[in-house]
Image (cartoon, rainbow, N blue to C red; front, side, top):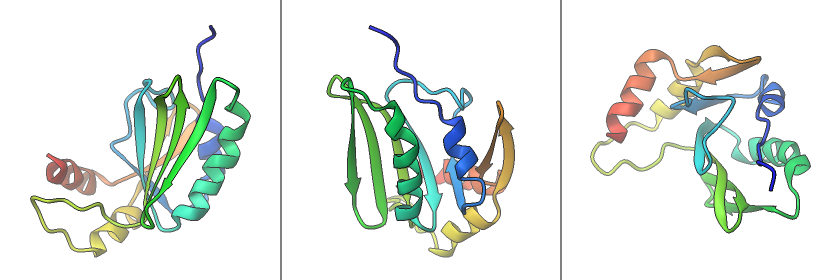
Length: 141
């Protein structure tokens, strides 16, 4: 059976003009590990999810299926292979709830607005600035 790989580069080309920020960008990006996810903060999760879905449709075969979970301020787009998550896009339209620390809602906008553009492969990706990334890693710890 051939390996299944989703090319993420064209997707992020389509997202260049959108307001988003990838939290904890994996070192292997634009490759990915099976079962991993991308956490994406964005203002319009519906719009970003439509772009993702239109981009990944070409990769869906009888071996893969898409499962979407929409919780109003968070959308999971799961690509399922053999009843297991092959890859997940985890879109956040607001800060996730952190049980050990209180974070002002404005931090979410700050992360998106103060993003840094990094080049990975032939892709330009929006990630949090160094301070925001450090804060996010700390509060998730």
